[in-house]
Amino acid sequence: MDILLLFKALILGLVEGATEFLPVSSTGHLIIVGDLLAFNDERGKVFEIVIQLGAILAVCWEYRARIGHTLASMRTEAASQRLAFNLLIAFLPAAVLGLAFHHIIKQYLFSPITVALALIVGGFAILVIEKYAPQPDTHTVDEMDWKHALKVGFAQALALFPGVSRAGATILGGVVFRLSRKTATEFSFFLAIPIMFAAAFFDVYKGREILHAIDFDVFAVGFVMAFFSALLVVKGLLRYVAHHDFRAFAWYRIVFGVLVLAYFWQ
Image (cartoon, rainbow, N blue to C red; front, side, top):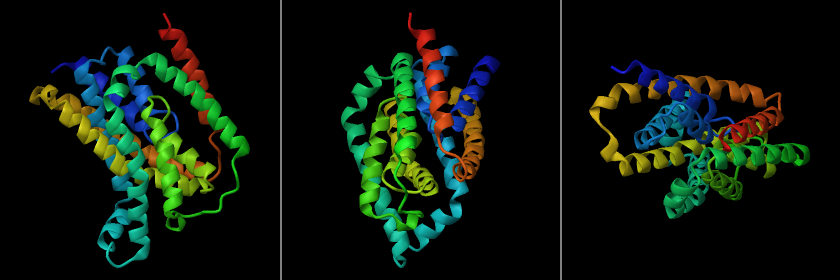
């Protein structure tokens, strides 16, 4: 058993769970931390995808009652049908563009420099949005219509660029499109389920030849750590957005991005 490798898995699992649902880019953090830990080879990239499943299962667990009710009442309740339809509509832009440009994105954009630049630009974008955000007119997920969902879906597609942040794009995009912060955050959580499962299974399938039974303990440690750290973040973020905006995350992105840029620009 390689203790050092397990420690790297623990750190990366913590980073994934802690950042996946915050507007700071989990992918960006994993690229940077993986580079610092020298765990950024092909096996490391597949590992990062697997531990994302741990993070998304945390959302499934936190919203298990709502998810179960939606699935059970799909044929009889208009609210459940509308939520499922909205998730499908919001899922499509990133899914289609991701399939079309997957290879190009993986080959040319996954680097610490591009991530650092995206973190900085995204941070300033959050500051602008927070200053000029319109008053919300939709206060629950059940009030959303397909037009809200489609707009959030196109916002999510921006996160195909590493460092943008899927959570940031969907939550702040929702705020721009007049969703309340709580509504935008909850819809971002729900939308993460299909898009992250689809992306994870697609990448795992493409990298299946790299997966070996000998790596099970490493993957398991990262997966479990991602699950529990993400569960804490999901619970805490909903409480946070009830009383705060996202300016703190914006300044974090800018400072962190500048530090990363200075470190890797050699």
